[in-house]
Image (tube, rainbow, N blue to C red; front, side):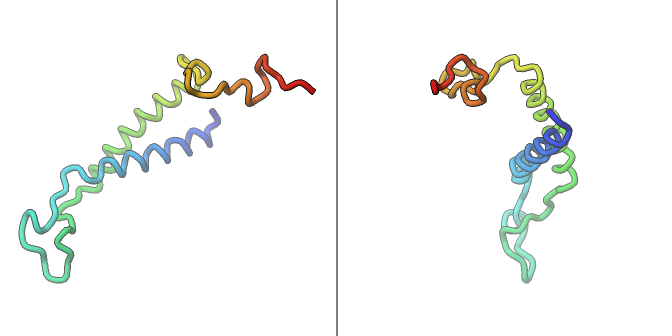
Length: 100
């Protein structure tokens, strides 16, 4: 894995984890108190974005390390998964080559 691919994968994982952590612990204005004048009743009272960004960074680092481990060391290769097509056939390194 190149370092640019590693950064790209980490950013995709980070954004995905961020969207999963955003709803946790959020209380809207209509749940806590009456909405303030000129605001939406569903607007969050205290979204805690800094804490969620830190939690997202830690979770994304763990998920990225797991992905990097499986990519680099390949304890389970994609070719061993029965319902996926054989990748070595796609790249021309397998035994089954089309006849000319």
